[in-house]
Image 1 (tube, rainbow, N blue to C red):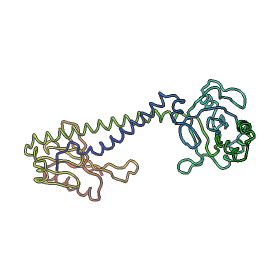
Image 2 (cartoon, rainbow, N blue to C red):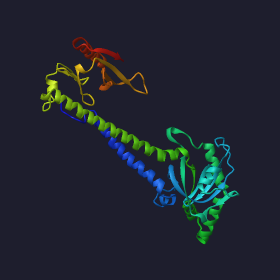
Image 3 (cartoon, helix red, strand yellow):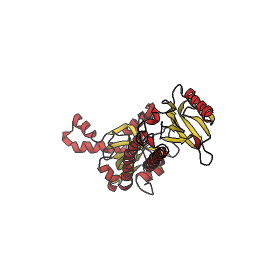
Length: 349
């Protein structure tokens, strides 16, 4: 056995290091979202071009209200054709969403809202035809409605006339199609305005990760301090162990390497998690328990020992993780503590 103040904290340290990196990434993303404008983020490359799902940014040029009817639309929702810098896409939105999208307190009257002169950039959520776990966001029937709406869209018809005019005498089927594809209509996705859940995620998630990281670091520091204090108590009580901790194993009256517990002279030592040194004269009762998985109450994860002290608060010590014969070996340890050292022993399995 080697002296180690990190005993029982190494996994926590590994997790904490990873959480620190995740915290930095999440905090940076949240900071950028809070401090940078939609235009800045768009110009830095976070922009909707058609090959994107999730949160991104769009430069709006025009909106056209569509007559699409669908059972999944809420009472106040409608579909719109959106003309943006890189093409055309369907929008699903309420009047409140439209106000947020065009950054206005009012929605202009009329079927078409022209936004080209406003240099308007907005945040959007891109919804793909197929979502996670095979969920269908756009049914085949709705996809057909999108394509039919595009065929009758005024915005797209104006775009076609502009292409024909620009090509002039150079108009061939090949360059006509090529020109249209410079700003295509993408039918197998639609966009929407991000809701409250997004903003809770972008600001709440980093805060939760940072808090979890700080709490974990605090737990690590507490564990290291606990180990240091326990070793110091051991060295004071048994000076011969200070430069030869392995003597605990060599001269143990009882040892169980599976449980990570031993009895040395008049002390009970746990070394499975944070190092713990208990004089047998310091407690009168011990309770052995199991910790079960929160997802499955039938599955044991760890075993613990609770030390009951008369004039101090009780202390729960992690002994070991689950293995086949753990209960039998814990029962054997309890029998030794009861019969040879007169301790009251309880089991809570």
